[in-house]
Amino acid sequence: MANKNNFINGITELLVLFFLKQRDYYVYDITKMITDLSEGMLVISQNTIYTATYKLESEGKISEYSKLVGRKRMRVYYHIEPSGLQYLDEILLNYQNTTIGITKIFSNISERQIPENE
Image 1 (spheres, rainbow, N blue to C red):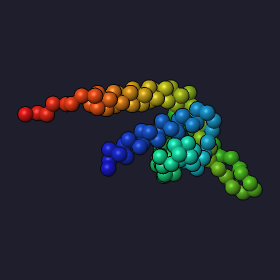
Image 2: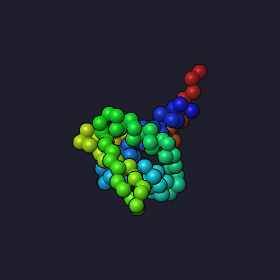
Image 3: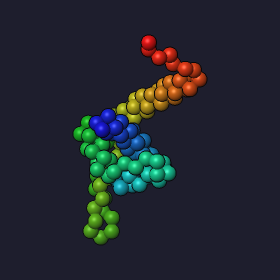
Image 4: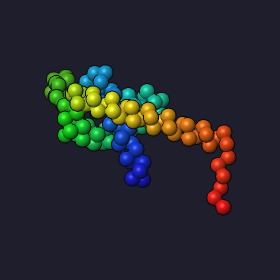
C-alpha cells in the first residue's frame, strides 16, 4: 500500500498546485473539484490534501491566509508562491513524461508478444 500512497501523494501535490495556479482555494474546494472534475474516478480525502498543503507550505511553495466567511467563521485559503509555480512546471513535465512512457509501454506490449524467459 505504501507505493499507492506515494503515487497519490505525488498526484495530490500536482493537483493542489495546478488548482492554486488558477486562484486561491481552501481544502474543501480542492477536494470537491478533484472528485467532480474527474467524474468520481479520483477521490482524494481532505486529510491527504491537508498533508500535501502542509508539506508544500513548509517548503515555501504555497502560503496560507485566513478569511472571514459569514459572521464568525474563518476559512484558510492557500496561495501559490513563485517557487510553487516553478515546482509545478517541473512535476507537470515529469507527470506528462511518465504517462507518455507508460502509454508507450502498454501500446508496445499490446502490439507484440513479449518472449518469455526460458
